[in-house]
Length: 225
Length: 259
Image (cartoon, rainbow over all chains, first blue to last red):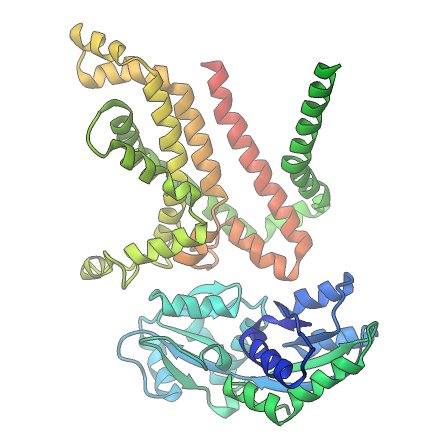
């Protein structure tokens, strides 16, 4: 199974739970960026299932008839992570203090999805210019943003809620974005057209079922919309 | 008969070696869309990255020379307890994964690093600055200069400097007229290797200095970012960087044969 990088932790757990309930079944995962796994599938990777973080990537695969039925199984949202001293108590306070602060901001590069979502969210919060002025790094993936905050270089950044659901790390404050500014990432899953699909459909059913959804929720994912 | 097989095996090894080491470089040059060079070089992002790469790598070489020359001389000329340990320590950054080098730099000069408190007291914040990019490049590249230079100094007979000194030459004069000309080839080779390594630095830079246009985004970082959306452009920029490094190595190491 090919899956988006941001699904790594949750899908390992989903896989273990599924194998427990289906003796004899064994799931093998390969995680990478959504664009990359789509390219791997086109290059002939022999996967039975694919799960992406971007509707556009999956839509193209569907148009190319590489996958058939596509199901949404989870959503993700952005959160502020604050690492500096004297953390703001809310996003409203963060937004108010940001323009006059000496905070160093880290975002994902606009080339990667998390960066595009972050740009859109900042736009909606009216913070785009203030953020650009304090930006110190455009990370090449969202995990890089978190690393900069954890290692003590940067003060604030936008990451996926699922990145900090398990353990935000010592000294980090997580702040929810106002609903109006929120940009949701949609995760979709599909069986690969060229393979036997019965077993793949069974796993998709499990992911969308009660137990699968509970695991995803525990990792910080939201319900499919 | 036997000798013929050995000869054949050697040729096979040479060809395999070429395929491994040179073929990828040729592949890069072949894949690059050269017709887009003019358009690429007028892009602001690329111009900034090229300029920054030159500034950062040159500064890293200067820093490496300033601290590396005395260190190389010390290890080559003086015997003292811990000399071998020091020599090993000085080559360690060469074999460290660059990302680990970046984390190590954060642990030393970051806000919560060993020197972080002292630096903060002076109002200095190193991470995410151009200075951080220079330090990252110097940290991984200086060992190449030091190792080459040390070998050069060790090969030169100490006696020559001593003779010069007994003839009344000052230490500085002896260094300038005797040692420096003798080690010129290794000095140039060391600078070339150090410079080329600094130009290609990626892992330590992105970890310690981050990635921001005009401040810390050197060419390798720009290449990686471009690879996400415009792979063809990344090929071209990569090929250009390869040619720059090639000129640098050939130009400076050419001095070895001239000397």
